[in-house]
Image (cartoon, rainbow, N blue to C red; front, side):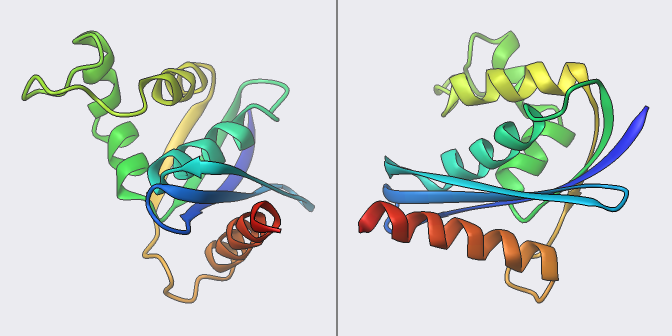
Length: 146
C-alpha cells in the first residue's frame, strides 16, 4: 500500500461567509497543491472539503497520514464520532442533528477505502505545510471576493 501524506486547512471570512480550502498531497518526491472555495459556507465545511478533495485524487487504496489543524475533522474521524452520528441517522449522542452529514458521509466513504492515520497539528504554529495550506485557503477566498 502506498503511503501518502496529506496536509489540509480550511478558512472562512465570517462564519458563515466566503470560504476557502487548501491541501498538499505528498507521495515520495511528488507534491501536489490543490485549493478551492465557496461563496457562502462555514469554516468546518471548508476543513472537511479540503480532506475530501485531497482523498478523491488518490487512484488506489493508500495508507494516508492526514495532518489537519481542525479538531472537528480529527476527532470526528479518530474518535469515531462521525461513525456514531451516521449509525444514529446523523444525530449526535444528545439527539441533536449532526452538522454537515453529506460531507461526513463522503469522508467516511474514503475512510473505508484508505487507511487514514489522523494527526492533529496546532494551527498557526509555524508548521510550514500547515501554513502553506492556510495560504492556499485564504487565496481561494480572495478569488471568490474579486
